[in-house]
Length: 229
Image 1 (cartoon, helix red, strand yellow):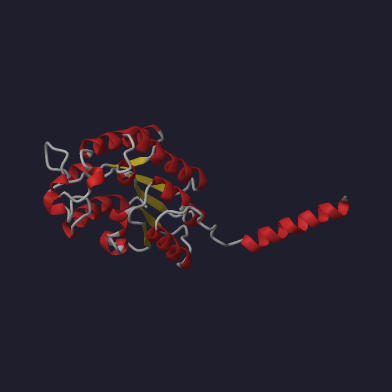
Image 2 (tube, rainbow, N blue to C red):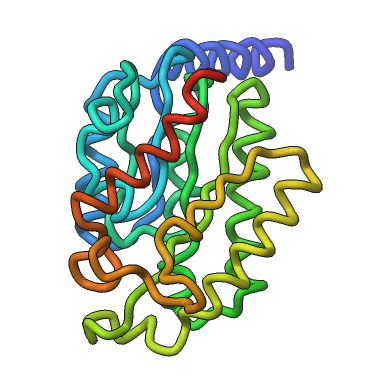
């Protein structure tokens, strides 16, 4: 019996030693671009406590160099086009072990395109938020509102008729953030045409993704928070 216990202990020690310092593998399987980006992130340097992480979907990814946009060093882009809350949740293992200085999270538009209710979209986002706060409590977390869309382009059929639902999701995320004392950044008013649910046409390329001008406005708003980091 003692021999069995010794063997089990040795196996446990081997596992601990062999996995020490390694980033846990992301096992969530989605679409090709997701898997390719996750693999690329795995090969890059590990995120550490000096870095700010921009986390989200295509809107985050297509910004490119966030350090340049925000005029601050050590900002890493962890956006993946097409990603949703489940995808982001499953790749937090590449981010949270390094306990980054801050995470700016934008989440929800792709979940909304899956015909989920605003309540369901908010619940999925909250699952991601809870995991971040539990696994890396010293990371400063910022929840960014979902941006409006412009259906006049006729490109994103899965979002047709859902412009008003974006505002409902944002209101739920705002309330959740206030309840849990998380910073909520309401970008929505800067992008929407006054009195409507429609994104200003000059800020978007296709009704969803941003123009260079759109990214300038986004970065301008986020720079207001950089002095607190």
